[in-house]
Every structure is written in C-alpha cells, then in structure tokens.
Image 1: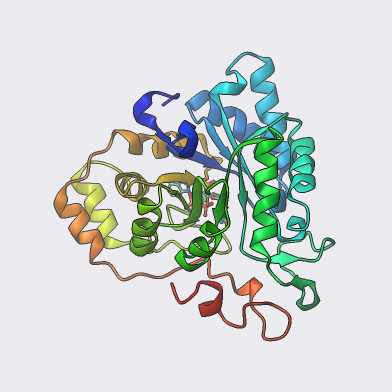
Image 2: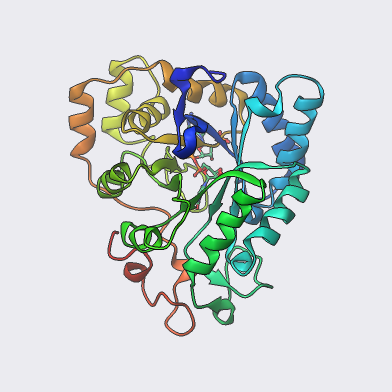
Length: 318
Ligand SMILES: NC(=O)c1ccc[n+]([C@@H]2O[C@H](COP(=O)([O-])OP(=O)(O)OC[C@H]3O[C@@H](n4cnc5c(N)ncnc54)[C@H](OP(=O)(O)O)[C@@H]3O)[C@@H](O)[C@H]2O)c1
C-alpha cells in the first residue's frame, strides 16, 4: 500500500482514490483515540481517510493528519480526504464545506459527498432528525452548490452516498459535473449487483462502506465475519474472514472503507490487497441470502419526511 498504481482506482477527472479507505465513524466519540488511530493508520499504509461532519470526527482526523504532515510522514498530495454534506447543509453546500475544512484545518478536500438524499432544517445538525426537521429535497439546487465547491477549489471531486439508481438517474439529468462516486453499504451479504451495474455504465465508482458488515457497530452485525461460508473461504486461503469480505468487495470493482482502531486489525485488513479468491469462492458468496443493515429508518416518517417508507427512501431497491 502507499499509492502504488495497483492500490488506487482512477475516478472521474483522473483523480486517484486509494482502494482501501480508513473509516472514522466511531461511537461513543473519542477524539484522542481517533487522532491516534489516524496516525497509526498512516504509518501502516492507509492513505484514504473517510470522515463526515455528522461523525464529529473531522477535528480529530484533521489533528492526526496534520501531525503526520508536519512530521513529514506524508505530504498532502499523498493522502486522500473525504467528508460529507449533512442534510442540514443542503441549503448551502459551500458554507457546509467551509465549516468542514475549518474543522479539519485543511485548505481542500479530495472528495465531498452528499451524505444522504435528505434535506433538513439548518439547525438539525444531529444524527437522528426530529419529525419537524425535514424539508423538501431539491437535489438540483444541492448539486449546483456541490459543483460550486469544485469550481471554488474547495474539493477535487464530488459524489453521493446512499443514493439509489433512480435518484442518480434524476441527478444526471441536471448535473454539469457528474458524481465521481456513490458510497454505499456493500459486503458479501448486501452485494449491490444492480447498483454496481448501473454506476459502472455511467462511470460512477462505487465505494463500499461497512464492508465487514460493521461488526460491533450499533447499526452493524457479526453476520458477515461470522458467516460459515466466509469462514470456510478464509480457511481455504489461510486468510481471515475480514480479508475475504474486503477482497470480495475489491474484486467487484469497489473501493472499501473499513474501520478499525486496533493496529493488528488495521494491518490484517490491508492484507486483503494480497489475497486472491477463485471462481468457486465468488460463486459461493453469490448464493448467500442478502440483508441490508443500514436501512435509513431515521429518515422515514409518515408526516414531514419526503420518505413515508424505507421502500420510498431506496426507491424499491432494498
Ligand atoms: N456514507 C455512509 O452513510 C456511511 C455509513 C456507515 C459507515 N460509513 C463509513 O464507512 C466506515 C466503515 O464502516 P463500518 O465501521 O461499518 O465498517 P466495517 O469495517 O464493516 O466495521 C467496522 C467494525 O469492524 C471491526 N473490525 C475491523 N476490522 C476487523 C477485523 N479484521 N475483524 C473483525 N472485526 C473487525 C471494528 O472494530 P475495531 O475498531 O475494534 O477493530 C469495527 O467495530 C465508517 O467508519 C465511515 O467512515 C459511511
């Protein structure tokens, strides 16, 4: 790892995205732990850092990265920093990004994503919106603001997160700058076959969050790393279940964003880059039942949200 051509994917505009990203969403929040983990991750070889205003981790991620930059461990161009626009900043993506850059104490982001297809009142900057916080989604104006962020040099590229094929299709009808990435849940038990085909045809890169199924997370599950088929594939290759899950995602053409603040597991996860799976492994995984973990219930209500059901949020793609 470390930016070699085989460890990166080229996005829209030729921008290079490191294939294994480092997630920083961890609850309960512990800034010192995040800052330290970022430093360790850099030493081990991670170059892509994924944060978001709503994780509360931007400040700690910024501290960890700046320390490494000042010590000459890496230079700014060698790292890739992603953050996300929360629903309460849809009114003003440029203002939202300026705040993110202030939190990170950085001049620019490599990638800025619309976190969810949901617009909230400006005051609603917390993870679970109240019923009265929802506004009507106007992606044409939100995306124009995202494009402005690129024009102002505040980020190198822009993209989406948690968008269905239907919503991307609508966005492409008015976008001047197409989304470079759609960051979505993807792992062996939620494979995103339809979305990957759809995005592939439109040159939108799919980035996989919760690629291990988020074991131990409030929204996650042990089902992927403890699945008997994943375990048996791991045993066959003298690898670990986590490496199998990550390698599967990489071989499906996605980049993966995995989170571990444990140095041994950080190394283990990067080891997925060395693993080779075979046709039988893919066939076995393809037969597994699917279940989406991050369902987005917090954006659904039958009064003020534009989404009256989970099916509406995902346009039936769940
Ligand atoms: N765009 C979105 O809406 C969205 C949603 C969710 C997540 N994300 C991003 O994606 C990142 C990753 O998501 P995630 O945390 O759900 O991913 P994940 O990598 O699937 O799960 C992380 C969990 O797995 C554990 N773990 C890590 N490596 C392991 C291994 N080798 N064996 C067993 N357990 C292991 C970690 O614990 P330890 O730390 O103790 O190792 C942590 O509890 C987030 O941090 C965030 O940056 C984005």
